Each structure stands twice: as C-alpha cells, then as structure tokens.
Image 1 (spheres, chains in turn cyan, orange, purple, brown):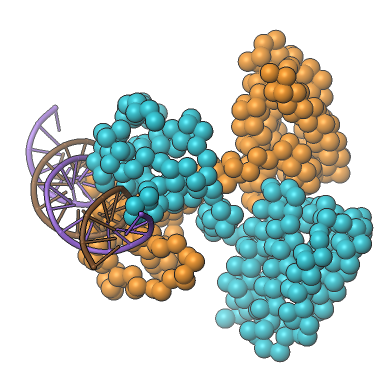
Image 2: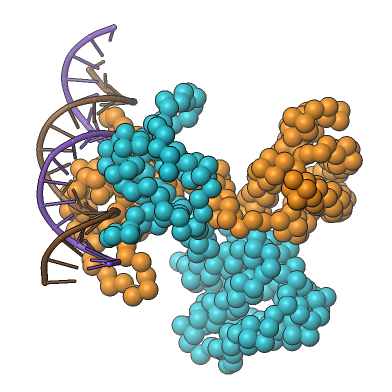
Length: 260
Length: 260
DNA sequence: TAAGATTTGTTCGTATGTATC
DNA sequence: GGATACATACGAACAAATCTT
C-alpha cells in the first residue's frame, strides 16, 4: 500500500463558505482516497496509528473524522485483533433516516406525498406483474391477513394503518429498479411516521380499512396472473381513494387541533 | 435550562445488533433531547463544557458526538464568543449528497432513472403552469440560451448536457411540493454525475441537443401561457425521447468499453 | 488597532476495553 | 487463560477563531 503524504492542502475557501474544521477535511480526504484506490465494501482502511502518521494529525482529529464517515454510513469500525475500519455500503435503512432528517423540517402534507405516490406506485405495480415467485406473493398476503377484521381498539387501528404501509414497503423491496424501490419504501416510512405522530388513525375509519384491504387482495391476484395493466389500474385507483380518505383524516386532526 | 442527568443508560442490545460506541449513544441522546425540548433552527445547544458535565464524558467523546450530528447536517458549530453549536436545517445540497452515497454502490442504469423521471417530471411541469413569475421564466430561458448553437468541442458538449439538466433542477426549485422538487433535483444531479463519470456526452449528439432545446423552449411557452395539460404533454414527450437518446449513448459507451 | 474574554479546535500521554489466537 | 492487536476513552495543556471594548 502506498504511503503518500496525504496532509490536506490549505485550500482557499470562498468568503461565504463556512470554515471547514480539520476533522471534516480529513474525512473528505479519506473519502476521496478510498474512491481513488477503488476500494469497495468490506475492504480495510489503514489503522488509526497509520492514519495519524499519514495525515500528520493527532488521534483525536483522526477519530472525529472517522465518526463523520461512520455517521454517513460509509465505514464500519470494529475493535480487537483483525479489527479496524472497513468500507461499508450505506444501508437502505440509514439512507431513509438521513433523508428523513431533511424532510423533518419541511412539514410535508398528505397531498404532497400522495402526489408522488400516485405517480410512482402504479409504475411499480405494473413492473412487478408476473415477476414475483410464490413465496413473495404469499409474504404479501400474510401482511394483508394480519388484520382480517376491522379494528376494535385505537391501538389496533394504528397497527392496521402501519401494516397497510408495510405492504407497500414489501412491494418496494421486490422492485427491479432500486431507485424506484427506495423512493416508495421511503414514502411508506414517512407516512408511517406521520400517521403515528399526527394520530391520523384516529378516529377509526372502517371505510379506509375495507377499501384498502380489497384493493390489496385484488392487486396480489393481478400480480400473480401477470397482468401488468390491471395491476397498474388497481394501484392507481387505490392511491386515489387512499389520498381522499387520508386527507379527510388530516382535516379532522386539524379541526380537532383548532377546537382545543 | 434544566440540567438533568443525561448519562446514557446501558441499554441492552440485541445479539445481532452491532455494538454502539459512546459517541454514537451520546449523539442519539442529544438528538432526542433537542426534539424533546422543541428546539428549532438556530437555537443554541449547551456548550462543550456543559455537555461534558451533563453526560459525564470526556471532551473527546462529546466532540465525536457533535461531529456525528454535524455530518448529518443537524447542527452547525462556530468558535468564539457567542459561538457554540446550533440546530441547523439539513440543506437540500447535503441531503442530495448523503442520498447519493447510498446509490453510489447501486449502479443505477439510465433506464432506472428515466423510469422515475418519466413518472415525475410531467407532474411537476403541469403543476407549475401559470405559477411562475416573469423573473423565474426568464431565468429558465437564460439557462436554455447558454448554448444556442450545437457544441463544437467535447468540452462544450459536456457543458451543454449539464446545462440541460440544470434546467430541470431550476424547475424543481420552484416546485410547490417540496418532496417532488427534491426528488427531481436529486435525479438531475445523479444524471449529471453519471454523464460526466461515464462520458455519456461522447460522442457528440446533435440530435439530442436540437430536440432538447426545442422541447425546453416549448415548455417555457406553455408554462407562461398557464397551459398545464400542454406542459405535461411536452415534458412527457421530452422524457421519452431523451431516454431513448441517452440509452443510445449508454450503449455506445458500453460498446467502446468492450472494444478496448 | 489592540487587548481581553469566550468558546471551540487540536495535541499528547496514558489507561482501559474488546475480540482473536 | 494469557498474549496480542486493535479501537476506545480520559484529562490536562495549549492553539485558534471571533466578538467586545
């Protein structure tokens, strides 16, 4: 392994730019070094003492840099012999969390989310027709059948909402297109969070439960039959009614909030 | 400000879960503390010495925790009197970068990206009809007119591709729906990166330039006229031809690669 | 301009924890 | 269980940035 001098050059920064601390600079340097070397998942990075020598920085600075890369999901670190830091793929879960931080401040409306869902989910449904094996299809049906009856308590109601979104997340997991799959999974998650945070499951809505369940069963049939057009149509229709019902819930919550 | 004991409790971890280092635990604790307190953008966090006391941890550990939060875009830190760490909104730019890390490993195809673009961009176009003021419309035209003539050099060709994607990013900036806007901006960026990385601008493609430019001019007209249906149709058509041409470029690159 | 106060930034030496052999 | 090879954590001292006077 080459041991070039990796000391970060004192790059000029534009007046507007915030000053970049050394740990940040080191993290950037390590990142581009990894890319240059063409390292990939699982490959080992130089150890702490090695880094200290290469970058001519103290242990503390190096460690802060490593924590930065770790927070972004780019490396993983283990102690002990054979330990050290390793290149790690960013997991879908972490990517969802990081992206979720961005939208945390944005106060998305149900309408915003469904505008995107209505455009994407039917495409996914169509692309999946005839592509799923029996195990996958059974897995979907298992999720649907977790709640064969209308909810009796508020807790059950909440669980039903979440299970219904889980159905879409499962569908997304099987997407051939990873971009499409990720986006749909992400939306299922923020809807899940919103539902819980804003208690969109209250008051109970039997209509939503009945329609949602029927659509999902029909959809699985169409997927099993390999009928892409039908799958797309069912999903499009499902999205439309779900949006209407969810916006209704959102309005109720707002009303409740104002009334207090 | 209350000074409760925030020492992280030694929470049991499941056998599968990787061990969480103290900086990570502290970062999580700070994050949920901020949420509990209802702090928002610009609010100040306790200083380093304060944190050291609250968490009963060393300075280094606290600092590593802060770097983790900083890497996620959740806080910003300044030195000097009146300095310290502050709650900061995650910028769109940072969110794009973090999400880009996830897809870095995934090797998306042009087809994958356009499957999503074809579903989303027409929606954006339609939603923007009649919504943009003259300044915004002129801004869009300025981008289009950066390259009124076909490229003469490879460098110009690359710049034209990127400017064309910038047009879409600008459009996305004006979206009323922040989710939709972010996603389209993100796709413009990864396409931009892919174009440069894989040299998808080579060989020069006059057809792509001519059609793209014509579509964009028509689109701005439709937006100015407030004709949503027309805007949607133009964008849908634009996406379809662009996908075809870009997949052609991708195939050429592949061929060139095999031939070598 | 200069000095002083405040707050983060960086270093180094040492000790401890953890996983492998 | 002991030796080894790693990361992890602590504390005290010093440096740098920035605001105020």
